[in-house]
Image 1 (cartoon, rainbow, N blue to C red):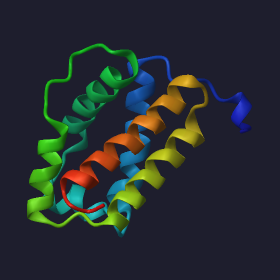
Image 2: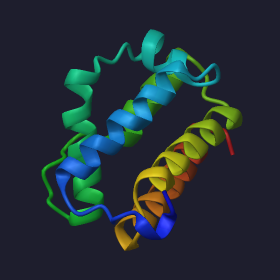
Image 3: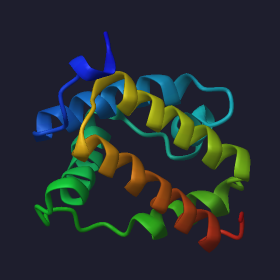
Image 4: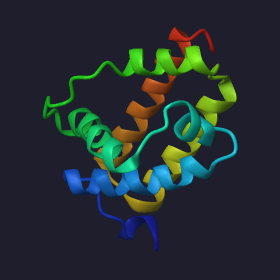
Length: 128
């Protein structure tokens, strides 16, 4: 499918679809999979609604996400050091998942926010 044929992210359902697609890749990735499967031990059925709320707030300003993303990642970092390669891998997987599925201003905003978030977390965990 040509990038011009892709629609933009317009609904929470689009975000949830994207999160499922991303996490299927991330959980199996040799660089970052263990953060999700062994350290955080996330259950996707529980996690996807929370992370979808986070991204819904980032893209559509719905204001329904209340957790501290930075603190969550600092806690993970204390259990297993997050290194630069982990952030690079996460960002590459995230960006490519967005690019494969969506195109438009919200898709671009999502990728920009992902880069910003990854950068801040790297700086706050000392992995700059």
